[in-house]
Amino acid sequence: MKKIKFISTFILAFFLPFSVGAQQLVGAINMLSNRMINFNKHYELLQKNITLDDYVIQNNAAATLQEAIDKTVLSVPCGEFIMNAQIYMFDNMFVVVGDVWGEKHNSCLYEIGDLVSWDEKRVGTIISIKNDDECVVKDLQTEQQKNLDFSDIHKVNSLENFNFFKVGDRVSFGKNKYGEVVSIKDEDNCMVKDLQNGHIKEMEFDDLTRADLDGDTPNFNVGDKVTWKVFGGISYKSGVIISIKDKNSCLVKDQSGNTKEMYFQNLFKLGE
Image (cartoon, rainbow, N blue to C red; front, side, top):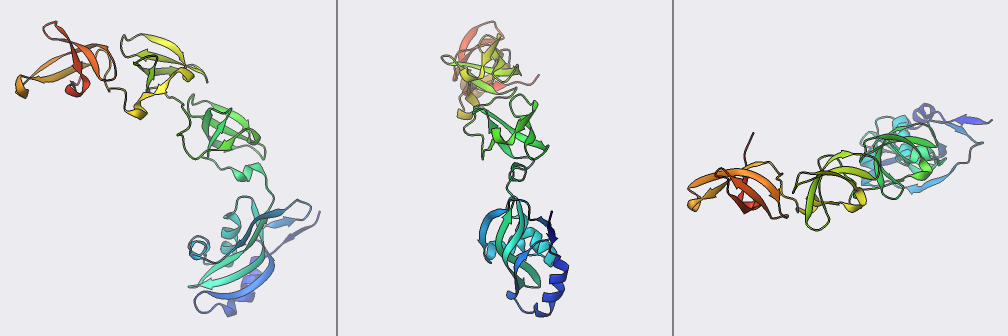
């Protein structure tokens, strides 16, 4: 097995006499790395022609050549070394540009904390990387951890296209019915408390819509103590919500025992 390590400290000593002035090319080398290169591996071009621009200077400049090499190599997932490297000095900082090569494998394409999806509708975050083929993902819905192959997951940028639910989420279902998720049973089902009658029933996630995303669900529950203005706003009455009719109104029993329909926009929730 043939291995070669390109020692950047040697190159640093070679180029230092030329490192004067701002943004100056101080040297070029065919191949550059701080890592052990194993030529029995299948390396490939990962990013061609990283050039000197404001972004590269801001993100890859370093006080030492060793650090500058690493910054450029690590700026590309799976990067191992630089071909056709050029070394610049910029305000007494090193910047290295060129072609980044490496060996692509799944474990370097993902990081802990990445948001990923699997089975079309599941979504979670990577909490650990076990090896080149497998990682541990925490399901955002069930909060359970599971081992998944990298080949079975893909990165996602946001949760907009995923209708996943957590305990406490307000949901809508059926015709103008609203509820709250009170527990998660498994990957497909949860227990929902109906906000109209207070009953709890098992429901499939596919039958639910996240009502709070559209501002549809009032922030009231059956049993809430509420108050409202009367007589031109100079006095208040209070009561208890006994049922929720729809997204706009509910039935309230006041202190006199009378029941009346009230709009949520006219109610104020009382503390315990």
